[in-house]
Length: 353
Image (cartoon, rainbow, N blue to C red; front, side, top):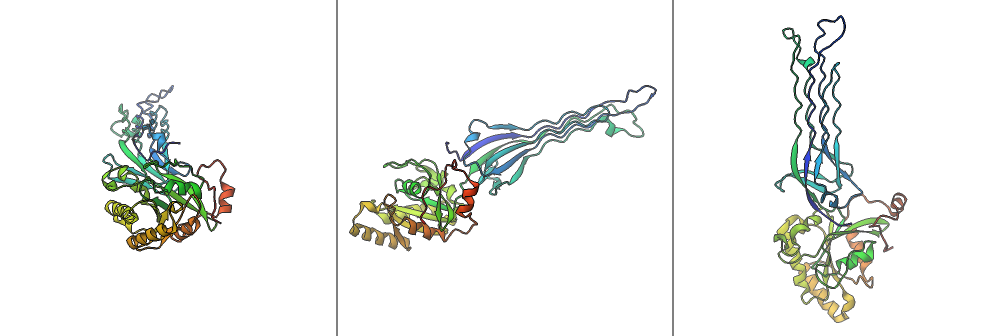
């Protein structure tokens, strides 16, 4: 399934049905009077967050959504049926923005959350409603009121416990493939990953959702490289796992470049708990590992974990450190196994315990 995290759609609620002009026609009732029914209300458009979606790809080719129009009123004071509501289902974590792409209409962060995006038009009143003491036979009924129409943007922000950060080719995809069943594309060239990947690892019998964020480079906050398009996916994470390529010439600069991009994008990202790891150490000797670890500790002012995803060296210790920063309620592994099936693409393949 292709990943799409942004889409523009057009929504239109249904127009209200027109009221009816009608009069009683019965034998021996000379002045039957008006009996036109009201028009039905137009259908509304709702947005609903559902848990079984993780991309907006469905909106690439289906961009227009129109709710049903209300039916017209009928004689014998029969009101027209209401138009059927339209429910647009989006992944949990989707923001709905106005056409200016800045005004946030609603943030769909909870499973089952539903929001009225466009209200259906009211139905027009039939001529029965206009009968008065001085106008016993009104020959007028209201037309239905128009529904609402608008263009909105859908912007998906991945909801994950941990954001996996690092420069291109820092080993993030390999790490994710080792600790979960996610199968991101892995190659020895920059920007192999061009969209976020999600994986589920297990630590102390509880799930940990990890998002592999595509590699950032200097100037990403201004759109350089893959730009700031994917930085938004870090905003909902509880903690950051920052991988620094141990084979790079200057590990301190590699670390500080990413931290600087986070600060320029949103200062809140800098304040998130962070675990730093020196990756690809299987390609280094002990002397090089000690030297680069010391340089990275000096630059980050944090404890640095030494890991090799291929050899599974230090991976558990690193995950265990990140785990302490995750505060949300998480399902135990035995509970998940009862509720999920093997067909779920991002279930775990490897457990550190």
